[in-house]
Amino acid sequence: MAEAAENKRKSPYLLLLYLAAGEVAIVAITALVYLIIGKFHWNVLTGGTAGAAVGLLNQFLLMFTAGRAFDKARDDRGSGEMSEEEIKEFTKKKENSVRLSVTFSFILRLILLGGLLALAFLLPNAFAVIPAVIALVAVQLLIVFIGLFGKKQGV
View (tube, rainbow, N blue to C red):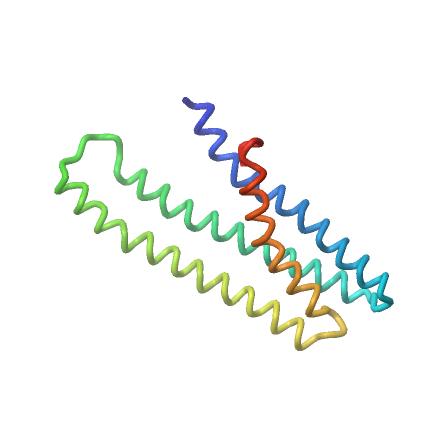
């Protein structure tokens, strides 16, 4: 039983590791495409790397804040028996706390994503916009891909 709980705790970190490896591949493929079409500049790498870093940070913050909020609610509940009324009261009380934590996380992550895009648009010589966007979008696609094919690895 303890081994299953430990595997569940490792799973988000394993997901981040797979996402990071996928992002490295996406940035490399993007740079290769830019090289093939003769449009490569170092800002392609910085844009793609910044997009990948922000995408991974976004995912980490989501997993960390949501996981922490639910873990705190679970710890506050304890292991004792509760009546249906106590369960309803506890759920109502903790629901707002979890919702507030997740909302704060969403706003912070939205500012982070918007900040990267603003930076890429304001400093196009330092960060290429298209590779940054490709890397940001790739995180979501990689999550779907890992979800479809990663179940056998425990992700």
